[in-house]
Image 1 (cartoon, rainbow, N blue to C red):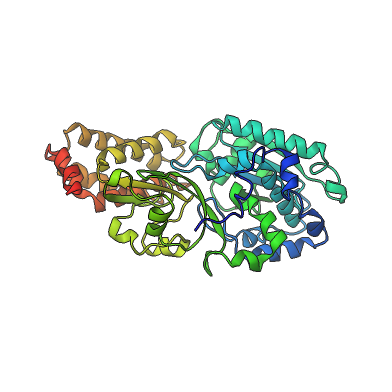
Image 2: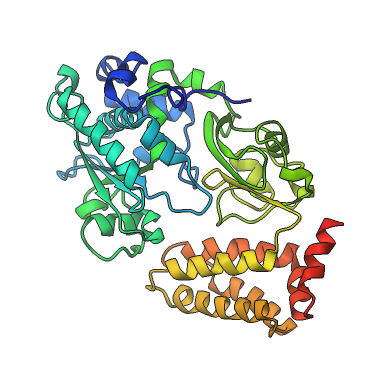
Length: 426
């Protein structure tokens, strides 16, 4: 099931070093790249069907095409490496295992969109990743792969690493731009969109680490070879981080479109300790949970996830076994998003606070059925009434837990929480 496109060098010793990376093909696409016109590069990426790997799944080449022409302003590329979604850890593998693949992808994207300056916005807690990435960038400059006249070609690309300060909300693209500009990391109202008025008011493309790192393989092997993996509407491969109650948690590169439960059993070794499956979080903490019955018909692609009223998200799959206390899980979930709210919008700032108070009341055993109902109503009243989708990242999964595991919330209200979890084990 596993394939090795992005992860081809992950198991090679010192793969993060330029000398080793070059032995295995790093920067091998540059002569081919600069023999192409920038428009041809964009068309090849469009043809490949590569979709954004940050969660939204928007076609990368189409996104590049939104840039306005002849504005007289510089065009910026920003790489979103603020990987802060709970249960998500795919990008950190790229940063420490094959940073030169990311740098090569940056060169490809920069040439395609006419950009000469790139900012990599990296999560503040990624201390090791920052060191490895910066060392790789320094190597690339020393070898002539960054800076003026890249590999002897008449094109300049400069890369700056900007380290965040630990705010989850800065993973939102406009909050990320505000942070780079030295302002408070709060999302902007849109429009205008970053492609028109992004960093410093200039046209800006923002792509995820994995999206950019996918480009060297596509340019080297061609769009048709890339489309040979995955499905028609969700082509290619994806780095999936599988965690939770499985026998073999880890990061796996898989073609899109595989059956979810088949991946769980054959790749991740099944639910650990011989326990029963209770639920699956399919794409990071902000995605609605799937019940075992629902998971039987889910495949790992954007369309199937949407059809099952959840999201592909970041590819962070969390497996929940029969012992999980859903009410405690929801408390932890709301606590995280309430803590990470930037406070700009009242529904998010105040609403998530009220949700946290209510669920804590339920956990203490002081809640009522009306509190459970109110928690559900707050999900509907908060969602999509804010500048960004952070509030929805909380309310969408919470609503799914309330709807699918309501009996556990009612058991807490009835002072019988242990029986709710026990019932799921029988």
